[in-house]
Image 1 (spheres, rainbow, N blue to C red):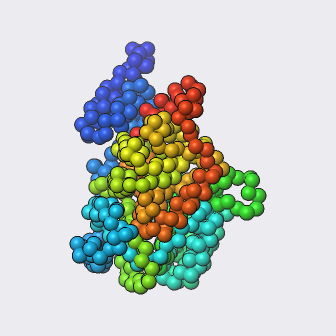
Image 2 (image 1 turned 90 degrees about the vertical axis):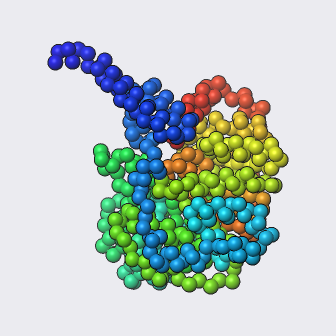
Image 3 (image 1 turned 45 degrees about the horizontal axis):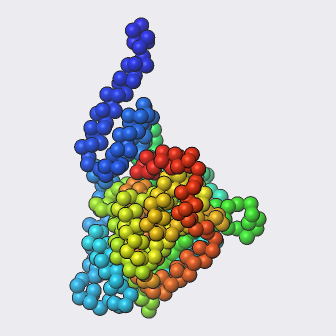
Length: 487
């Protein structure tokens, strides 16, 4: 015992080194992206104990291990029938409006083959700029709900907006409308009182993957980052705006909080069926129940509008990085321009290379990112990519009016993407995400005008000036870049 106490630090360091060797070997045998593996192994060896904690909490690959087992909703006959009715076949593809979609047919086929997600045509969409417009529309639709309300959000906080939502949901539940709520356990700040109130009103409410130390801590890093709502199976909301006060620019005392720039989408039509299916899949997973699928979940919808919408969902439970592959395909097939807005730009090599190549080919590539942002390490990691972008001719803009949180992309005046997915590894490979891809000239034109308006609140970064930033900044960026695959 005396020998142990006298040499405890050497013993602990030796034990740590042995565990690190075993863990490094395990990591190498899983054949992940070399850059990610190198970052993890670097952390393991350079940071005793802390490196192991980082690996345990943030680095486990659940897509291959299938921790998130395949949900069984698609095995039910009603969903199979719905898919068969909506799935495009070769004959359908011949009848598509070629002026609008043919340029992006590769993307259509990719999502169709990856996850059997059809492109739907009978949709009416409305772009909602900032939280105040999104919540005005959402609350109005909730008030008019007749059969069910399904809510799935990364963040639902108890506050001015959250409490108003809960009050509305309780009122509808007491009227006989079936209400189901899913919120992310780690990200949300929903009080126990609020949860108890919803349950007392008959609302089915479940947290997404609760984290209880120590047996479930490995799930800490895999979160449901989606922000969507479905009302009566006919109206859906999807985008970047959470249920939280900071996302709303209140008219009173506007200078007391940071201006928040975000984008959401209201969809009425057949694309809502895809959102509904994703909600039901996750709700079965978190509730541990097999929710009985009702006809009213997928009602017959007859709309004259014909906006083409395709829903892409991805997460640790999907075989492919569906949204990342869709974004990559959109970039690689661009002919004229690519306009991107993202709060976190920490791309993988594929996306970074594709953007730089597109610019050098002659495609106009513009990217809006926050000047400050809400994460210091993410800001420095993002800055580490800017020089390479500028050298390739990509135009990068710092949004300085406030926090830009929108996750949007407009390509060639025909394709628009709006959703929850950031351009970073966490969204591509770790979190549950969902995006809407719209093949429509009018929507693309509207989003292009929105983009031009946002550019007025930005400062363009110039390569010569950027190269003159302080050496300390470059060192911070280099260190943050090492952690980029884990951010």
